[in-house]
Image (cartoon, rainbow, N blue to C red; front, side, top):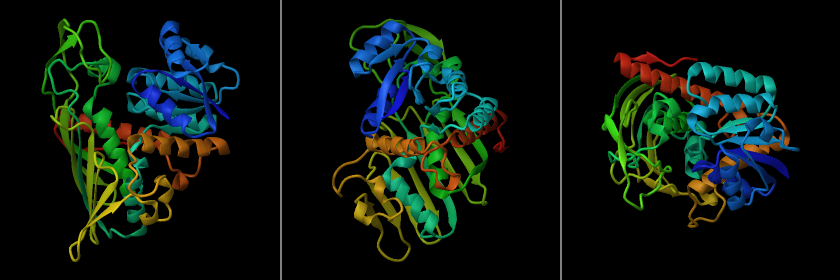
Length: 383
């Protein structure tokens, strides 16, 4: 059994734990959080045998091999540094860090440490996203013309919607773009095999002042009693749109929003090629739309027997058995832990999970998007 520890037990930490327990060869042995009382309570709830509140003590846990960083954004860089300095394999929530300079530093540290390093870009792990990427690699879509899409949510729709992500000191200078736009960019770059190299962005804050619950609240929680609010000035975007150019000259655009009523988690993209178009929607994850100029359009389902051979193992059940976000999360962990079992990073072309290199690349894109909005011009993405 591979011995694993998780730092952070909020919304995403238990999702990591659940996926890891589905693998069969991984044991989560320790949990670390901000206070020992909270860490112990969460460890008891999740049946994790050891609890810590100090990261260095946690990293010294006997036999610990891999660490998952599931902390709030502003802690990612420093905790990732500590994990790498301890020589542990590392899986970080996104964003990898908050600045491009931190991203470059962490990539160098990960390479120097010789550990397996991954970043939680989960949407590339859906079976039908894998199918779209396989079709693109095989040439089935022809020459790439353009890519369009969006990532829409409604959890920040109301003026009273507030959590730590709204605070730029904790969530970073970008919110909607860094939080969900990063996922869209990674997914589309994975599917196309192209890099976004230039952007033109227009961002929006729809609530310049939000009303924060003075007692605090958890992400995605519902209020169950009367609360008191305090006004909080907002500096991070709720929505935005981006024109972009790929490295081969093809173009596209996408929009993100955390204030789109009725949209719960709708990441969607459409790829237009000379032979066909491909479209996918995360809220209907088992279907890939294949558009034709001549002949009938298709809706391909994620039956393993219908998928390309190189990615068929991304779907785990017979056709008609619903697979979704938790299953994509399992795929991500399974691919990462195959590398951990081998003890080294796979070559870039054979890597089936996002690495620190991918996490850094998306950081560069988000940085260029922010500069483009501020300067109202096209901005080149840093290497």
